[in-house]
Length: 162
Image (cartoon, rainbow, N blue to C red; front, side, top):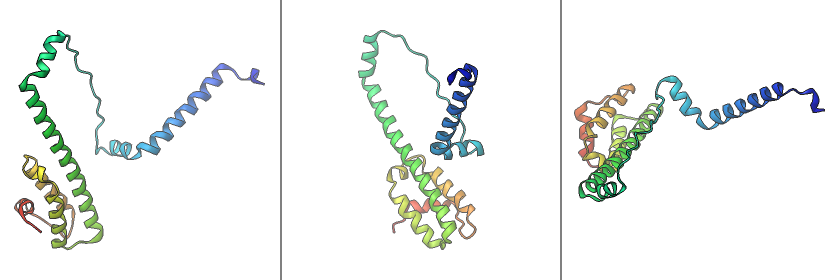
């Protein structure tokens, strides 16, 4: 029965099955990522392996325990959490603007909604990213037909209470 199948045919069938399986998995689980890469919203990122540093283990241990490294690592940790907050805030703001476009919010409703979101991100309020987020709010509002904001109004949203 299997004597009529050559090794070449077998390999072609296996390669086609594997390719179709990986295509299915890629489209099923990574469709949004692939779509963003194809449309140009996101670029492919390749991570390089850094040069390995062959130092003495003792000097490396002393370096890791030094107070300067500990304070630098903690400031990077704070920066990292602030950056994560900025990422989630940007994502939420884009979703709010898309939602406002669909629901046709009035300007005051929209501003109150933005204020409530900004009040949840106090770490971003006191960070250097605040002005960039305000610029994002202005640029996203430019996409809406009914709501326009200036940079000053966007900055004022951070300080106002509900």
